[in-house]
Image 1: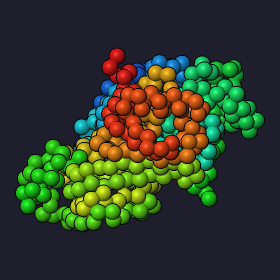
Image 2: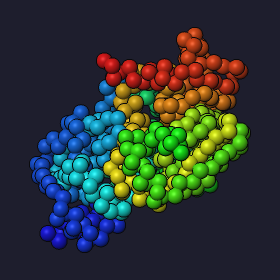
Image 3: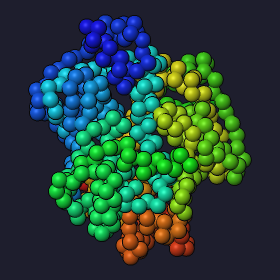
Image 4: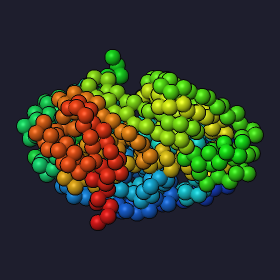
Length: 230
Length: 230
């Protein structure tokens, strides 16, 4: 049980909470633990976001897909991690992505109402979610205002940044080249030049012309944050 | 005093709160009322976001400016309205825009710590801020996944949507054409065609080649939300 507690304390939305305080919360609030087998679907795109969900063991893959364009972007999250809590509230309370178990994995879920009770009971929990949501809300504006040239490279970084989070791994894009050009607002030669640059720097791999693996998210995103260093 | 209370109850983050409950809050928590003259600067870009700030009378203009590109976007907010509470928390707790009084206007501000106390005291206040932040956090991903063609028109709508909110008025873009092309990922002929279309539909006005006034935000944003109606 100590092991589970330790894990919970490392969840992004539970950070900074004392073990004692968490113990009190767990006593009062139902925490549901679910197990998924390798490859199993955990959530379907469009599923209602009725619970805050955490990966507490193993890894999951989140996959977004454009409705009209041939474009998918997916990434993996390892435990301990939260699965996009930005769909619990707001206009759209259904997940815009599917989630699969990469290997056997454990999910902890807390009902939305119960989670709100937790938020009200302790400022640390509350600050965690407010920080998480605010960071997401700020990032696009901050990045756009800091673009140096709005180059295709910067726009690729912006796209990756939008659909992934700091601890995302194994980011993969799958696309029809024409649609990726549209999405980035890039002509094909400019896209090709950006891809060559990224391949050359070892920042991406392309097993074929319609699949891109991001080797190092941080390095790609650094294209956007250079301005901050000046 | 009744008048002020009525206004407070219409503030986006206070919606759904009973008059009685708000009375209790106002008794305990310091609410600061400030007056600004027409044209006066209320906030400077980079100012720390130490308070949640509301426009309770008159109108303000928010102005964003790109650091490296020649591009500005500004819009007005009329009372009752909140001034971007997404900078209270998160990575960046300084405002990325300046705010001016369009005419004589009244600002109500509540200290961040006091605001957190309010959030903990009542679920209605808490839901309001969680909904506000989540909506902002969701919108870029939702729009990108719903793009029909990622046309220049859609990208203009996306840019306007990112920097303004539902009740923004008098939206104005000021730019060097080359930089707007970069920002949109558009070649000049494609930008010109999109501008002609928008002018023709009466959705924008252009007093000169480097200034664009958005006549109807809703109409422009509808380019992005068509998919939802299908």
